[in-house]
Image 1 (cartoon, helix red, strand yellow):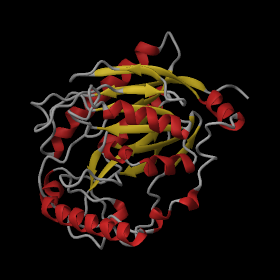
Image 2 (image 1 turned 30 degrees about the vertical axis):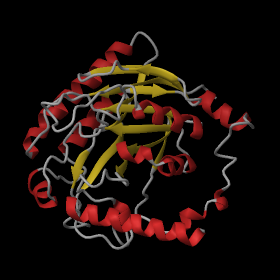
Image 3 (image 1 turned 135 degrees about the horizontal axis):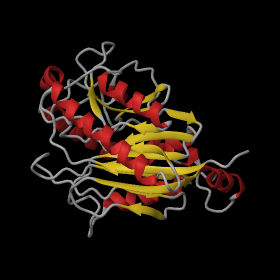
Amino acid sequence: MEPIRYSAAACQTDMPNPVERRAMRANTDRMISLIDSAIEGSAPFLPVRLVVFPEFAHAAPVFPTVRELIDKLAIPIPNEHTERLVEKARQHDIYIQSGSMLEADARFPGEVFNTTCLIGPRGILYKYRKVNTWIPYEVHRSPHEIEGYDEPLFPVADTPIGKIGCAICYDWLFPEAIRQLAANGAEILIRVSAYMDPWGATEPMAWWTVVNRCRALENIAYVVAANQGASLKFYPPYSWPGGSQIIDFDGRPLAIASPGPGERIVVAPIDVTALRHERSKRAGHHMLAHLRTEAYPVYGKRIYPPAHTPVPSFESNMEMIEESKRRLDALERDEE
């Protein structure tokens, strides 16, 4: 069997955030240009087959209410932006993890999701809707909160370049989310992110890098992580430190963009054949095989959300967080 080895490109963006749907076209225009640059720059070397964009590359939830997001920015998927990415994937025979956009779905009226798509030459392979929204500020909905939601929360696509799964930004602060992607077969873990200072790519905290490396090593998987590089003037009230990076399955950085706002493209090799050999032959430090699932009763108890959730808002999110903390305190007392 021919080895599966290629380059991945993490493309961080630095663009104004749209405040209306039609303004999203300019962002997609620039993303198309970045794809061409990543392909051309790598052409004499190991060709790029996977291109990843950050959270909010298409649009961010800049309005404080669900109603405003629905009225001004939310769009169904597929749409003109995903179709343009499909055309580009077909042109170059590549796979593209789109930047996230705000999705409206007629099956879930009144809801907005923060959604990214894995796109290949034949179309959209999966939609990933952010499960762990960055509460209390984010007011789009986690699909986990919707009663009767029957689509996979953590989809994985089996592609000619490996098994690919994605989670968005704050999801990665929950080891369980990324472990579920690995349990579903993911070999390449994609982080579509807008991780801001002071928790971003720079010391003394550098959560961005610490978490990316840890998720890679504990799941024996590559991590391709594209972080938002927008300056403060574009995405207030936070500044975005970039630092997009690619990590191998032992947690070693293969490529890291210099920290700071601005566009960057970082490229590194992905050797799926080597990863599969390692997962097959390794006995020590095989955390996927060593997982004692029944040892952790905490996962059999509901913590968040503690009840059916109302329409998301900053205020309702704060109430839910406080209720969950009370529930957590009660669970701790029960264990004593």
